[in-house]
Length: 138
Image (tube, rainbow, N blue to C red; front, side):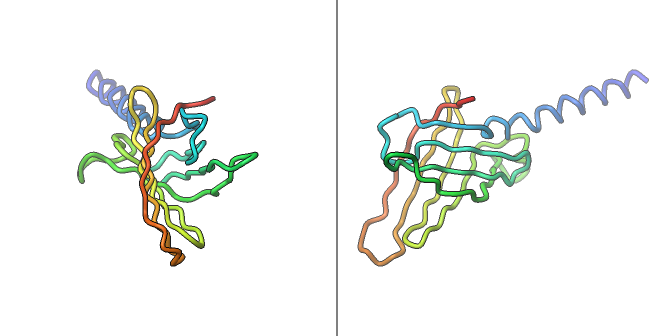
């Protein structure tokens, strides 16, 4: 009986920890730099390794809604379930003129978002990358 209670408590702790890692990414995020010319805010939702992300870019007078797309959580190795041990999340945004890959990582002070943009419209513009810091907002 004691062993059964121990196993039950242990499984509850594991289940709680399993969703804790994904929850480090989910929620609303705002760029720490109010003068950014990149992404101004993000919203991530979901509880599985496949999340939904919505991004807004810096436009004037209001941010441009990039829309929603799938985001994928990654664990630290092939044997780890990213639900419980997500170390990064990626997402791909495609428009008529570019593709942007987002790589998100969390840290004690918030979330770091690196973006990799390449142009697909033949404009001759060069691909570029940027890295910005985001803070969780209620």
